[in-house]
Picture: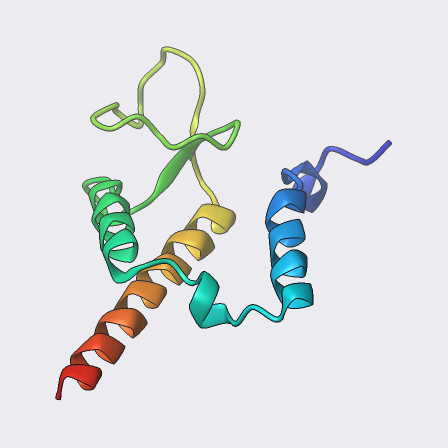
Length: 109
């Protein structure tokens, strides 16, 4: 039984790791498995819209996205939490979008 504090509380990412392993074994390149620019653009829009009025990505204390429009001082259960995991994920997706968009722009020249 694993402890429930800090990093041990993270959800396992076994499915994503299995997909990466399968792709590596098949010799599939990252470009072949990369999301499309349109998918990345939609993700970027969603991620930007999820920022609160102070430019934060908040989650509930159980890791779900903080409900849009809900006050941080709401007393109807749960606390707003700054999640480094969510921050890292969102920043990585935004960077992937910018990288893909720059590549498309460069290829069009």
